[in-house]
Image (cartoon, rainbow, N blue to C red; front, side, top):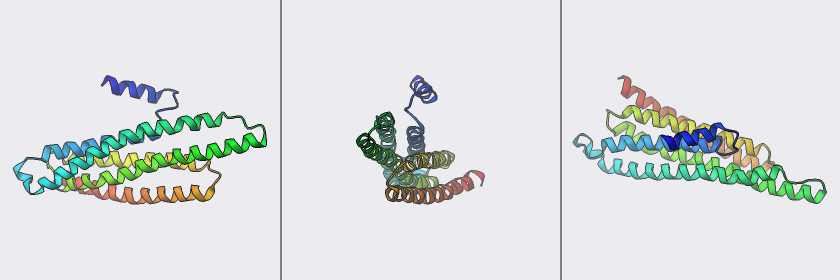
Length: 206
């Protein structure tokens, strides 16, 4: 827990990173890990033997997602550094302003691309969690529900970091393209997460 406490102390501080984008990715990793827990409590049990192959596939997919989320959390911090430096660049002459604008535009594109990848990974991880919500251990089905809510939160957290960067882009066509991708991910991901959460609610309340 000391490692987590250290991370949260930095997150709570004035330090520029980690921020909301990286935290969203960590939230996604928690969701994937909870899905894995359900899978690990299911695999090898006679009661769920008919789903063994699918559960094993889910475990592999969720482990890969967990790793990808942690990578993207680090990526979010990496791409923010050059962007933070760009704000402090001199822009007194026309040439300096042009160079700063070009550099900023590249940094903003990169900074928006990472949370888009986080959103895409959230949706990808929801599939295995859904299978486990339907066919995983009934003793752990509530954890699938918690996991899907973590993934939903990660999705909606990450989109904030798309919009905050695209808002500043001079290339409005590119900004709108990225916003449309983000909007589609939000629509697809929230509908999927809410449907899966409904499955879990029915299982735990029934």
